[in-house]
Length: 318
Length: 258
Image (cartoon, rainbow over all chains, first blue to last red; front, side):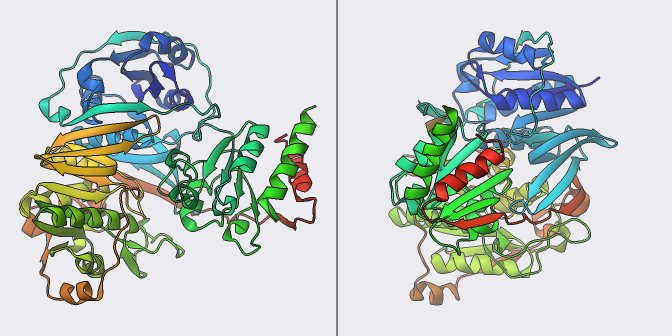
């Protein structure tokens, strides 16, 4: 059985949920092999083992971590050429897609991005994508080279499958060309204490209707153990950080439940949340386009509706 | 400083979009300059206004794509290059990046290749990295701020996990996000001046690119099927009469979220 490479998404060895999802998908197609870049592989190894990685190729030095994207693509290209995997799965975040893009050129291979499913088809690895703001589903495959596939979060339920995850250190010399863009400073995001938007089962978002006051949105989110998102209008107004922006130029999420409060639902926002399983909206304007998408909607003031809902949720826990 | 800005002519995202029989996207309706490219054009104009130099705007597309170039010229770009060749239709990102890279080389690789963060139709966000790879230039992508000085470019990149400062020597490939600036509206003067600005049209032959390596036939990926998802059925909408929150909570309970 051929190997399937999975680029590990982690922070100093703390493995993100997307990695477990990608290892699960990899197992459908071949033998999962994790590629780990940066510090912390000892910490990550047990998690990678739990989710099926047979081996872990690990590289950690200033050359591979200190420059943007290109060194990781070089590492992967070197491993692809040596081990000829059946596919390479990479998380579909901005850096991941760029690594995938450069890897495709380096290995003269096809590239599929934002896959929401990966299966072993008759003609090889097949992907599913949701396109045109969720209105179409597309299946596709790579026809040349090694399929390079960037996979969205929440594409598979992680399945535990104990494996050896034997760590194999790799020391590739990164070319001068790979070190063109130096990362001179890195300020890690301070953890909010709430779930990551990409991993959250429930997201409550606020928009223009909050008028800058996210207290009601946050309290409702906290009652549900949810992540908090924001529309582009709220971010542009400086009410909430860009990292929370849901939409075409922010994050595209697909949680179990998405609650949009004071958000009109312009297409730019819808592109970011349209494939959520259940959608709820609260908005004063009965004509707001968001109501076209909802499973349940309340025409009303979020400053009355959300606190009342929060109190009910808290009471139901007692 | 000379800058080449790569732009795309895209279908209107507000309109209903669908696929042709060969599973390529329908591009027959009215299109426009991809909104995210405006930030790249604006950034190029600001850099050249602060220093000196020329902004060339480059696009691949059929005849209608000239409209994308026109908008950029009206904003203030100096000249346009339009790659127009039927053989390019149906190209994947790999093929598109090949054509753009060859065009950039033919135009005389500039100090900076600037692009938006992604197209509003394909939304892959991979072209800038592919261009950097093909041109052998540093990539400074997803830039929320940009400064050029002393032969280097510095940018802030706001990733999911961290905010980073990136530095690279020129020449470089840079992509900018929608956070970086406020694109200008073309002035009346700019609209009139645009009419006289030169636009060259090139074919694959002019670039020395073999038609077999691009287009639908040259693509490295194949679409197997497309299916329209049934539109979401609108659920219940109630008006808050003092109990909206209670009813919302009841809905969540019924759906087992609480």
